[in-house]
Image: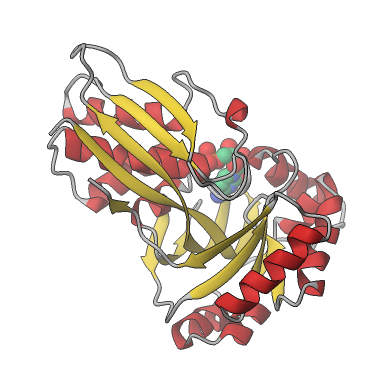
Length: 313
Ligand code: C5P
């Protein structure tokens, strides 16, 4: 085997409750992750020079619905996919010799865990290329050291996330879910958004963290029932207040989605991508066309959920 490709989905957070800042700088979460059809493809190939360190090429996916800002992606060792290959090789006691190729459709720094998807793709593809035979659970343990969203990117589907997001429990989500996404202009840095939420809370401008937060039972039941309007009512994101504060135009973006007939909208993760739930595929297409025409040209995408990473070849 000389080349392996994995298609790895972006994620959105259907709910995201953020606890107080922990001594290690992270925040405990209670979140519902949902992996969508928007995806990057990561290919791992055997390099011609067998002793080489990982190399990385990133291209924009052909047919991507919107342009991806490739200039914002680091190409050096700080890239999460490169670090994933190095970590997996160290774990397996072998050289990290691999050519990584990422075909990107997921917006960069968009709150959709695109970098985490690429890291998960590198773990999945290198595990196969190098014939390591690591289980999904093993890969998730390594993934947690790469970033809080990487374990979910390895498993996909719909899942409850606890801890800093790395403690996962799969959730049933009946049927197909139809989403419209509006990409933000520029990116928002995740640490900056968390820090701003802490500041807003400290000054009484955002509700305090819930002392004890458990799984969002109304949302979980609505997903299991396939009840679109109940899911729409239960969408929730504690980081949204901080994202609005840092990027005030986002509040109008969320309003525009609702005005285009979509039942509910919110900022995805730390933003700035906004996501909207549609009742069906037809409504998603109609609303996306309205938004494309009225102020969001080149920024609108349609996606379905949920999806899991899968191997292409
Ligand atoms: O885990 P990851 O490297 O993706 O996190 C990036 C940053 O986001 C962290 O350094 C932290 O500032 C913030 N974060 C957080 N709590 C989480 C996840 C991320 O504060 N649960």
